[in-house]
Structures are given as C-alpha cells and as structure tokens.
Amino acid sequence: MERVVANKPSTVSLLKVQYRMHEDIMKFPSQWFYNGELQAAPEIRYRGILDWDTPINWIDTSDMDFKEEFIGETFGRINKAEADLLLQELKAYINRIGGKRVLEEQIDFGIISPYKAQVQYLRNKIKASGSLKPYRSLLTVNTVDGFQGQERDVIFISLVRANEDGQIGFLNDLRRMNVAITRARMKLVILGEAETMKRHKFYKELIEYIHTIT
Image 1 (tube, one colour):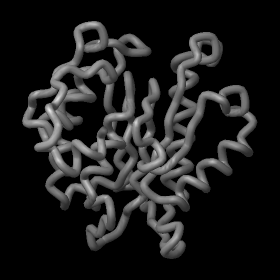
Image 2 (cartoon, one colour; image 1 turned 90 degrees about the horizontal axis):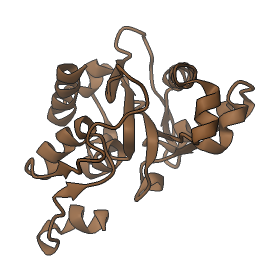
Image 3 (cartoon, rainbow, N blue to C red; image 1 turned 30 degrees about the vertical axis):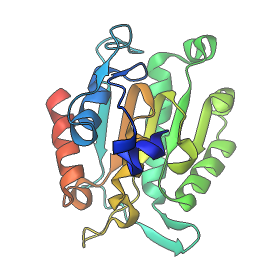
Image 4 (cartoon, rainbow, N blue to C red; image 1 turned 45 degrees about the vertical axis):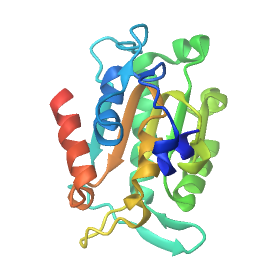
C-alpha cells in the first residue's frame, strides 16, 4: 500500500489518522509528503518509552571526520565509524531504559541503513557483541526496502554518506526516506553528517525540524 501511495497517490484515498507514530515523529513526513493532513490517533500521540525524552534525535557526525567508503555496485557504501557510533548510542539507550525492562516489555529496535554493506557490517558487529547478546532477538537490522511495511518501538538510521562534494546517491530517493523515518513508534534516532546531507532541501529541513523539537 505504501508503494501505491508513493507511486500513484491519485489512486488512493489518503488515510488521515495514523496509529503508529508519536506525533513529533509524524509531523515532518506529514508536512513533506501528505500536505500536513496526517494526524496521530489520540491514544498514541504522546506515547514514549522514557520521561523527559525527545522522540527524534539527529546525531551529527560533521565534526568527527567520519568518511564513507565505496565497496562496489552490489553492496554500495560503508561508514564503519558511523556504524560503531550507532551501536554505542544503541547500547546507551538500552541502558537508559534498563536492560531488564527492555526484556520484560519486549521493547524492539530496528536499525536501518540504505546500503547493504553498512547493514552487513552492523549485523556482524551485533553478532559479535557480548553486551547486546541478551537483546539480539529484539534487534532487526535491514535496508530501507527490507523494512517496508514494518515498525519498531525504536528506530536507528545510519545514513552513511559523508563527503566533501555533498553527494548522497540514492538518498535522493525521498520515497525510501519516507519509509525509513516512519518506521518508529516512539523513538527515532538518525545518524548522519549534516554538512553533507543539508545541501539537499529535504534533509536541511528535516534537520531544522528536529532542532525545533529537541
């Protein structure tokens, strides 16, 4: 259905009330893709995992000297330092919630990257991590397309691209990014180099929006 909406919006009567996302996660895609008409159902509008938490965070790697590497046409690009930072942030967030609570309440996490090489690297690191072993069944790592139609309590997104030319490749496909940023029920964390990404109007406005609510 999401693909139909993206490719032929005129054939679909848009559902204006959604039952997945916290309102702050919903607002930007609603404004950008749905003329601001999307609304959050009252019962999920303000739901969250932690008190005094922000539903969306952008972790800017611009000052960290992270660089992307081209692996090949099949697997695309990888940014190992960004992936490592994502896993640090994931562990920290699990600790903030409390490992016992995560397991008891089965709080689930999705980790998304547009590039297969980044996905494979993250999967291997999680598999090798002793501290993440108890939560492995609650962690899903996949490409944007692999998350089509799915949702998780918490979503981490690794954008990978970091270069001096502002090249972002198929991150220009905003339909894919609409899918990525609308998978989270209660918490969305995006890691990316703002200096690279904000040269594109969509990402510039997304970063600005996140700054207004954090």
